[in-house]
Amino acid sequence: MLTTTAPGLDLEASFEQALQGFGLSPAAAHLLWLPLPMVLVLVAAVVGVLVNVWLERKISAAVQQRIGPEYAGALGVLQPMADGLKLVFKEDIIPARADGLLFTLGPVLVLIPVILSWLVVPFGQHLLISNVGIGIFLWISLSSIQPIGLLMSGYASNNKYSLLGGLRAAAQSISYEIPLALAVLAVVMMSNSLSTVDIVNQQTGAGILSWNIWRQPVGFVIFWICALAECERLPFDLPEAEEELVAGYQTEYSGMKFALFYLGSYINLVLSALLVSVLYLGGWGFPIPVEWLASWLHQPIDAPLVQLITGSVGIVMTVLKAYLLVFLAILLRWTTPRVRIDQLLDLGWKFLLPIALVNLLITAALKLAFPAVFGG
Amino acid sequence: MTISSITQLICFVALSATLVLGALGVVLLPNIVYSAFLLGGVFLSVAGLYLLLNASFVAAAQVLVYVGAVNVLILFAIMLVNKKENLAAIPGLGLRRLLSGAVCGGLFLLLIRVAFTTPWPLPGPEPVGEEATIRIGEHLFSDYLLPFELASVLLLMSMIGAIVLARRDVLSSDVITGEAVDQGLIEKERTPLLLENSPR
Image 1 (cartoon, one colour):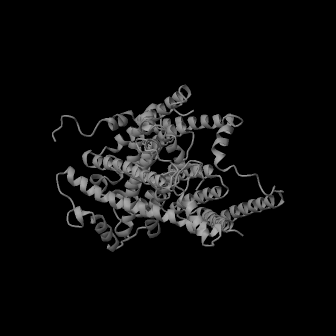
Image 2 (tube, rainbow over the protein chains, first blue to last red):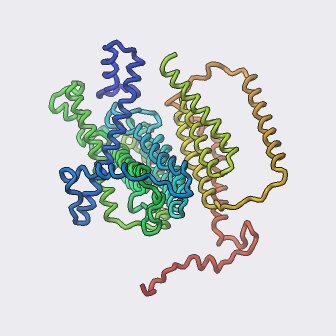
Image 3 (cartoon, one colour):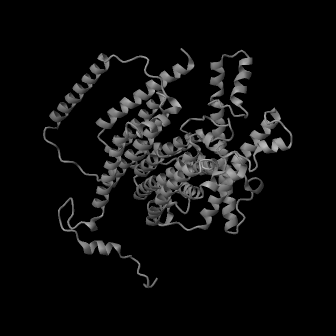
């Protein structure tokens, strides 16, 4: 974690100081600190998935005027746990004449890049695993590993539907990565940095008014469409189109291997929503800057209690924004029909790519013309 | 030795081992799909080595370009034309293998010799770390501008070439077989299968 001069809770420094108080060497204290944020973020990601599955069930039920899960816990909150347990106890089948090694490796390769990408998601000034300088670029490059896992599992299943699904997934992922990267590039150009922390800090000046969504409305829409396509959510779930491909590359999978795909797709959805909120909705920022609130209440911003409240508000805001976007994604899934594969590729290459390029060009021009507003 | 240097050493040994073994597997495995997947692993371990050298931007670019684009394209090509067929035995395969092995071994020895006789400046230049993106940008737009532009022109040319090859209707004869292109077939391809006023 980089040490920045900006104020904020620095749990790492306090934790290591406390351990050194017990007589540990700084290196040993750092070693003890290292796994903590990683485990915490992993747990947060899995809990996020459970919440997501519950929301999906409840919202889809509401859309279709059903009640949804009722009996597993209050309002069915334990239903995702039941789902997960069911998958754990299912028999693990490797189809006859399938390639066992690649069949097992495929889902793992799909899941690992998604989890690694949580490295750069900030929940506060110092509340992230690592403020790497290439930040958002790391996410883009990691998400490009995923198609290999999809191709691998599609190929290894020894099934034509799986192979076609895997090829479709890879084609879709490659096509939508380009407009996605171009939309991110416009934001990066405005904040002069690839680091997610810098991108959020650049949006904190005037609360809700300084969020990137007002300066990058087109980029926001492009990014959201591409993120949905990357997550293979409806209306873009072509790789799993039931009517044509049974279940695409997932057809032959069962038990924990299927659960890995399931987990991967939901973690990816939460991650995309978090990144939309970081890039366009001010990240951990409150609609009214907390600095203003503190000064109206005549509280010093550096006081421990104020810092604690600021940190908590930051986490709550990040998660709230992300889950609003997840809600939107779920609503879209249960209310829109699926596009055809040619429509999908046309949309990506003939519509989103030119628009994203024009958006980038206009952002560059505006940055030169109004450096005060668009980041000098 | 500090903890960080031990970690670095372990990472270096592990990455180098995957790199060498993976590269050997790419060349020696008979199954071309395994070779293609291993190539992805080789690219990833090269990215890991860049990361160890504090060149995180280059590492991410390596993953994006080589793993995300080049390797996926190779896999696409293999999977779309993957026909199970027994290739005809090539005469003198053993001799050919021996010859190519000898050439590769000689090249390897030559490179080892170069590596050992060159006086490397130790320790190397200070890594720029996070500043790397800025430095790369400055170089691309000053002293490396011409190669950068030439590369973009080359990519544009190959892109136009690929589009011309893929669109048969702009050519009068097929590029590969030399036969005349059947325009009627293309016309038929374009008419929708379901007619607008057909009974449903």
